[in-house]
Image (cartoon, rainbow, N blue to C red):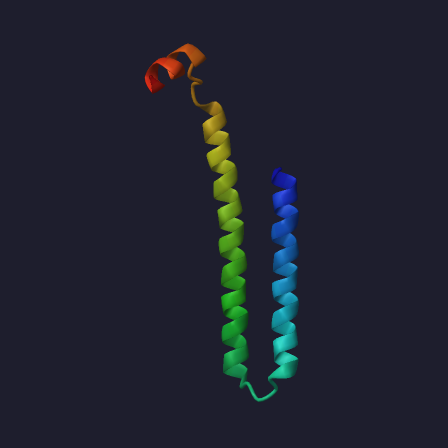
Length: 79
């Protein structure tokens, strides 16, 4: 499941990158400051996506380490 999620995320990032490059061609009147701002925001989005991925992995690892509740105890708690 995780690998397919990574593929989807990578694919959507590639699409976003391509669309930004296409925007530059469509909007030649944009000044350099606007282009730099877009690039900076795009880099920030990529950094946040990478951090999100790292935090998800850490959360999954933490959950895997934790003590498991027995099914009898879980059933008793849910009654």
